[in-house]
Image (cartoon, rainbow, N blue to C red; front, top):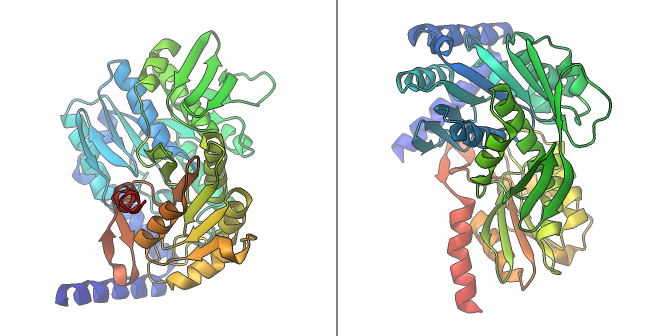
Length: 436
């Protein structure tokens, strides 16, 4: 208890210092740490090919897919994502509650990757990481843009500033840029010069003066996704239209590394799923899906996938929203989207941090249009999952969104509670079935 109080005190002091320190001084502090981290570990990115993936959604999935493709081509890789860390055959969970690690951790990881004879390293690059200069003094050879929708607006100040932060990854790029041509922000990212450009998409039109790939004959099935690129058919176990886009981004990386479409296909076919991304915990008699979706666009894509998977039943949505003042604007939007697809909605904790959990739920509820008897407010996330499972019957889909495979739940005073939606869902399923 004493250690918890001590930690809480340190956490409060740190927040206070942030509030009173001028932004320029904070910026210099982060930039200096970035240089010191690279200097201390002898600038490891100069000895390995670095691939950075940025965008609002799909970054972790693209990292996982690209890693599988490169390994299929015999490339020894290292990777950092919100899911896990990997160097060669060794893999461990990212339990930092931070997608892009701090400067010293990042540079240490890259040096270890070099020592372990990896030729390529993939890094999930976040706007917050860029804002804190974590990307500086890393020589990115390839940069991938997945998509852009509003996120972290309070932190950056506006959508334009959020977009510009992402753009910094491409601004100093010396190698290959890979752009989603179906995203409305494509022109902004295409304007940055690079030695080689690749574009991908489903709906884009017109000729380009750079290499492009397009998915055709797309089938979104309950068993997976099928599509064709040129004369190669891809039949994958991954779910959802959004994963077609993620696959295309990964294939572009493979092609840029001189791999064939056939090799890319083999790499993707080895993936059963992406941890915490449309991960199916139970298939019958009803389906239970755990997913990381925490933005309006990602949540809608998830529910569209659930519509394809359900067998005549209803959709039961279990969701919350992040606290700590993060993107309050999106809370009613999440509620509105859930109303459009779900027959029952259970609002619960996600990562409340220092905010009132019930206050967050009330913000989400402002966008919900379902009748009151179809909405449940259950702060305890385990109890919320249990309730959702108890409401399910044959053919239904229970969608647990917001955390995916994250190993922690963040609550007040900087405290982190061990958590895993997949594990909790499995435990509660045993309880539910024992009563039925």
